[in-house]
Amino acid sequence: NAYLKWYNSLPNDFLDNNKVIVLSVNPCNASYQRLNSGIESFNNSLRDGLDSRITFLDSYAYLTWKSFTTTDGLHYTSGTYVDIYNFVNDSICKE
Image (tube, rainbow, N blue to C red):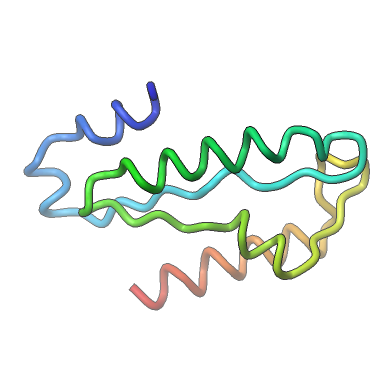
């Protein structure tokens, strides 16, 4: 709720004159996979509660669809980091 409150408290003038983009929290796997339900809940609350002038990029869904890999369940492989970069870059360039 603190993140949502902070984003939504940005001044109207700022939101009206700037592109604000919020990136989701990304998924875990292996021994950290148990955290994913909480991450999904957080992401859903953030996405659903953001001011309509704020864009939500769902990298969690993208990585889940893309079949991401990690080195230890929490830290991504270099290939997954490249995928995240490309997802964000492609999404921003479409805006």
